[in-house]
Length: 287
Image (tube, rainbow, N blue to C red):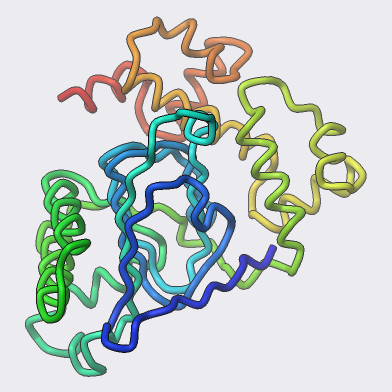
């Protein structure tokens, strides 16, 4: 699938664009753009697609997306319901040279240049840097003139100096592998996110894609680099991570709530994908 290429509109008197979103459907589809994107979810949660990475996002998360990296955030269904809680998102889009063609080559900016390079895989900002950058982006929503530039430099300096982030997309992901069938893969993503907690038969998802079951397996693998069954496992593990953090339900119930049929497979796949057992994951987060 070729993600939709978006053109970011920047006001004539600004070197980068900034947006404050209060609704969940802004750019809620698979897309890319030449600019880097720095986004802070003050309020909101759902499923995050970053290259070939699928995980959950939640309130407080800060993510730096590199140029031309396909991505989108699919907010949970609860945010689309009438009288639902409002999302609150701050997002900046900026070209690598928004401070001039020589800025990144200055010796003082070698760490920022390295962060820009790593952002091509998508970076989830962690630790103290996350809250600091989030606060800076909130300030940016009210800033004017040169104060905007100073705050953006401060945010990038915090990220590069703290070096506390997780790379999201894999080294092997190649955006150029996609074809032009935007709507088909988008439909697969949307249906899967909505129904992954229940069994999705191959014939069922193939019908969503409007191709035969045998063709679907080859189609999905060629477009995403992974099997559909593995994709579902990633969705379920991501949802289980959210439940571990946000609820106190027992592991057995959590296993079935996440869409797994038995506890042994849940434990196995959770550890394979996260690198730790469910209890260890929960303990590390609480610490």
